[in-house]
Length: 356
Image 1: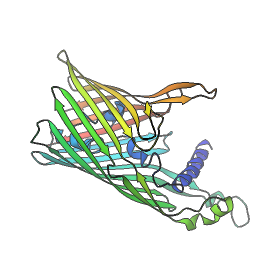
Image 2 (image 1 turned 90 degrees about the vertical axis):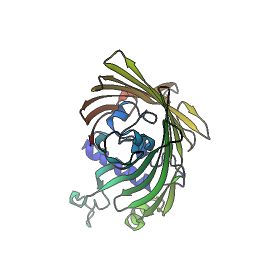
Image 3 (image 1 turned 180 degrees about the horizontal axis):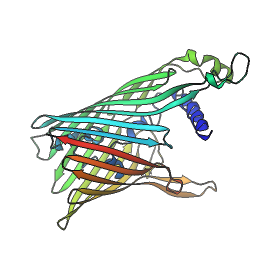
Image 4 (image 1 turned 90 degrees about the horizontal axis):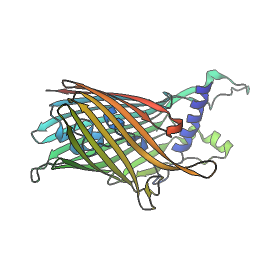
């Protein structure tokens, strides 16, 4: 019963969210902000400066230039909210010449089997559970990436993404969107710097609503009938810096931090204003002989108001482990998607394989 109630709540919230899209809503296409790969999630997403594998297609396309294998694959699966929401990711990258790489990444974030209770009552006015139908609310992203080493400045790599976004809420509404990302990485004196500009032109989602399916119900309940609209995802800039420290002979430590700047209004982050807001993520990765990895990260730092009007600081801790066997990397992350005092932990597993 509890799970049914949760699904019903998700159904109501989903429909309301989809049908209330503004021109530039806050947190648009937010499923693309979750992250990919257990390594990155275990380090709270601090990947912009140091990522150098197939997951660069998501974190920073410039990092594709650091791939050493001819072909590289990645898979990831995660579940959120007690398994109700599922997040799947797959990616492939390959070198096209000595200085250029291509990659394609696919992301799906969905809530499946949501009850459609529009026909719960039969013609006699009695409840008939056999009339309940089910649908999915799913978000898809297809990311095509290109990276190149810039010969005019040693240590500088640049890359770009072309994104195709498809979102749907069953037969009620769907949207198609397109956007561009640009990224760069620079290595200097042991330091790694990175910049990622997401949705630099704005990502435009064109929503198409099948209003006929809900016209009668929305009219009876006094809700606004949805209309086709354009939703714009505003740009976001991420600046990253990291450094690797060799600890004796068998241990190494990678320390990294990202500054995330958003421009869609005031957010509840460390620094905020009407023009821009800045969030801070910190991560580290300790390795033993580059075979076993232990990761920690902290992010999503917010000031939360309690019921008694007092405030306290909330943050999102993450951790993870990784094992590398030849060209196979198996990673695990334990992520906290809520306040640490009432945590909802999610287990994330990912696999990365390099082939020559």
